[in-house]
Every structure is written in C-alpha cells, then in structure tokens.
Picture 1 (cartoon, helix red, strand yellow):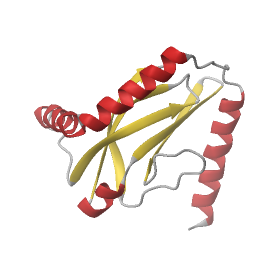
Picture 2: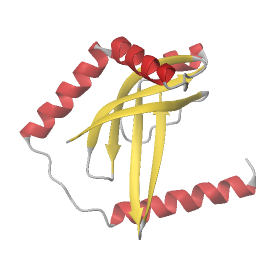
Picture 3: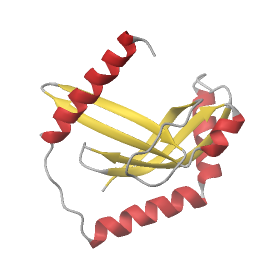
Length: 143
C-alpha cells in the first residue's frame, strides 16, 4: 500500500474518531432491542425479495449494477443508531461470503463522514473488510 493511501486512511479514521468522540450518547431500551431484532430478522428472511426490489428500482433508472448482488443486514454507529439492509455487489464468490455491513459515521464541524465496511462476519469487535465487494444501496431505520 502506498504512503499516500496510508495517510488518507489515517486522516479519515482520525476525523471519524473525533466526530464519534463528540457524538451524543444514546441509550438502548427494550423497544430498541426488539426493533433491531425484528429488522435483522426481516432482512435475513426477505433478503432475496429486497435484493430483487433494489435491482429493479436501479434498473428502471438506468443505474443497474454489474455483477452478483446480495442483501445483508447493516448496522450503523456514530450517527444516532440505525439498522437496516445493504446491497453488496461484486464477483459471485466474494458476494457469497459477505454476512453484514458495518457503517460508521462521524461529524466534525460542518462536515460529515461515512465508512461502509462489508464484512464476512456478523459480530462487532474488529471486523475485517470483505475483499472484492462494494455497497450499492442502503435501506435504514432509525433505532
């Protein structure tokens, strides 16, 4: 990886970290837990229907994606808390391995940053990026 790319990554992570450090705290109650569980369940149960809907919507607007697609749960942190679905796109072998997308948001001054991280795991902690895929669509609900 080039030095320029490392510098860009460090700057983005630093800015997002600064934005997350200033984000308002929010509490999770039983209703939030049920909402997260319900949306995650619906995403996994209806993933192919959601995927087909997104592909049709993009195709009607002449923005159809190239490659294999799949819908997985997305968890957003740093911007208040959201749960929903993300469509990933890429070569078929890589797309099959994706289990979830993590989204991290941060605000710094009047700017806002977002990182979308397709992963091969559904667990938090330190997820590694799934290689060979990108995110083509996001559908979210505020927790």
